[in-house]
Picture 1 (cartoon, helix red, strand yellow):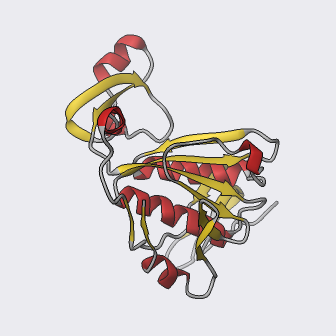
Picture 2 (cartoon, helix red, strand yellow):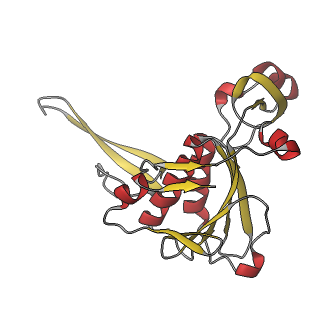
Length: 233
């Protein structure tokens, strides 16, 4: 029979926790009861995040591109569409009446003005704790700069995974998938061509744009490096 330990601190990751026996006692320890209780649960512990100084666009998009960027997000003044629920959607956006009618969760998607769009890709064979902290902090920095992010990585089996991240819940869901699925190096020839700015983070925690190094992150001084990081796109 395994014992139940109280864990004071978890490292980031997906943890499987089980309990097979519990012991109950009164405050004065006069009475004690042991009971079998088979309980299994899963705990998702997200990495720590640090404040990024700024990921900003120097100018607004024009024409059709601007119109497209302004049609996705969280402005409650305009409902863009009602669609099926996807992991990462906010429960407060669920259209409960329509969900009951269709017998499946339906979500209201609102319009919003974004500063722009960028692609953020990972070229990492393995995601350690520090790398996860960098990725999560950069995604949060994009949210602060009101950027719509096309976030992608290569799964270990060779499949390209891509998510659109526009709010914190979607960033958290992306990090959970990274920790569950893992990553693999992203071959140069398989990287998608795009007209939007593209950032890449390599295995050595080096952030690049168009082959130029923007920042090399290290464990010592990571918070300072991110707090001083300012990217104009």
